[in-house]
Amino acid sequence: MAKSPTFTCQSCGASHSKWSGRCEACGAWNSILEEAPLSSGPAKTALGAARGASIALSDLSTAEAAPPRTSSGLAELDRVLGGGLVPGSAILVGGDPGIGKSTLLLQAAARFAQQGLDCLYISGEEASAQVRMRAQRLGLEQAPVRLGAETNLRDILTTLDTVRPALAIIDSIQTMWADNVGSAPGSVSQVRAAAHELVSFAKRRGTAVILVGHVTKDGQIAGPRVVEHMVDTVLYFEGERGHQFRILRAVKNRFGPADEIGVFEMTGGGLAEVANPSALFLSDRDAPAPGSVVFAGIEGTRPVLVEFQALVAPTPHSQPRRTVVGWDGGRLAMILAVLEARCGIPFTGLDVYLNVAGGMKISEPAADLAVAAALLSAREDAALPADTVVFGEISLSGALRPVGQTENRLKEAEKLGFSTAIAPERSKTGPGTGLTMRQMPDLTRFVGEIFGAG
Ligand code: TYD
Ligand code: MG
Image 1: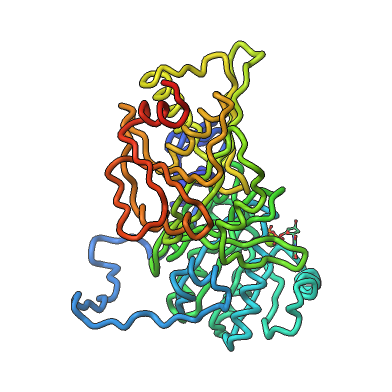
Image 2: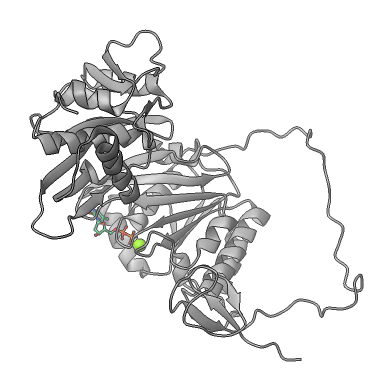
């Protein structure tokens, strides 16, 4: 019996028996495409007729050495990988087009190759000459990286099987084309098939494979969210195009901590590592200005100080604007509501703009108090002292909650020359902080003490 075609959502990968305008699984519109079914394995027979082989089983106590790791020589990359590259691991590096993924991976390939790792860089997007030109611009043309320009998955796998490199970089997974899948390159089935083949190759042969994936506007890797589940490590390369900072963020890592970040700066000669991000993020800071507040944050295992900037102004519109860059819009609405309901400070009739300086994205709830401070400072037109950092979570009741790693936050602030910290009551400061602590039980007290209102 001929198999009927399947319809696959290009956004979430769900399959449907017929086409429709909206995917019932994820709610995306116009995302369903017809795709030829995958060629099936042995014909289905009665249970037991087509038997597989027995798999080898072991117990949990079998001693396992820690995986050997190769350092890239780029400390920021090694940290995000969990201490270096693990043989046979599959890594996905996602990011907006043009953010610098190819640049980063070419630099990484060169560094790995210089450490003696056999390194293959396969570009499906650029011709070899283009990659070579980029290498020259980066001063890496002498690095013993082997270069290929190809999109045919079968040819790539054959090459990998012959060459057996220690590391293969595939730039990008969306350009790969498997000839046994009847849909266009970049579609979910193609990406899924290509990723599956490459990841299986990695596991089978012990080659580390890095897949580059482009991301769509809404922050998801185009279609192949499915790839995230197949690989060991998912890294996102983030940043604002207009800013020079780039953040490499681990969102999943089977071989190390997730949420770790590496910070880079895009220069004329490629990506430069930033060993002390706080100093960089605060380097453009002017004299204390209303609306500007320094937040002592934690990214992964590392404390990072960033500046929140707020602007509050009477609105000419009937519906006031709420614009946020680098922070969650829902969380901003919550803080505005708490300020209004618990402290009696309304923002009706006022436009609110909130920005994280330097193009950094903050997701910690610990930034709540810094956001509230920036909003109040902007609204009251009163600057906070320049030597002050702020952190703490705000609950809907208006109470302030202590946050994790308080000691690390304070140490970093002290290192960068700050002398006062505003934090929730009962924060575990630990011994030996040189900072003056101003601990507050709730938002009302904070407003009263810092802005003399409330
Ligand atoms: P690229 O690595 O091609 O991005 P992706 O692979 O994520 O699409 O990065 C391209 C951008 O980086 C491009 O706009 C130019 C900039 N760039 C520099 O600023 N300096 C450099 O040394 C290089 C190689 C690129
Ligand atoms: Mg690229």
